[in-house]
Image 1: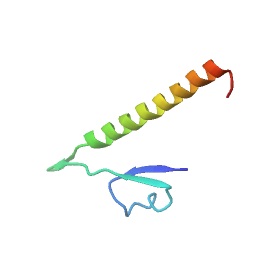
Image 2: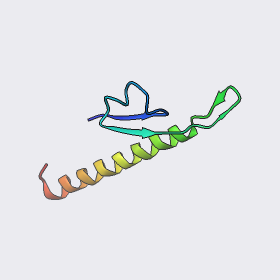
Image 3: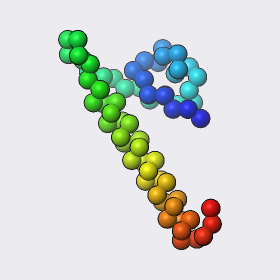
Length: 65
């Protein structure tokens, strides 16, 4: 399964993805802020790490994978 983070539904990758997260980035003149994208990536990473840690704790406790 694939998860795509993009700023447009028209992205070629979005058509092939199982899930698409759209991020609306702010821009000021010629500069583009990536704050929203970085926050989303960090939140996803923390959520996955938390889920994996719970699985490790369960495996340690039960002795089963």
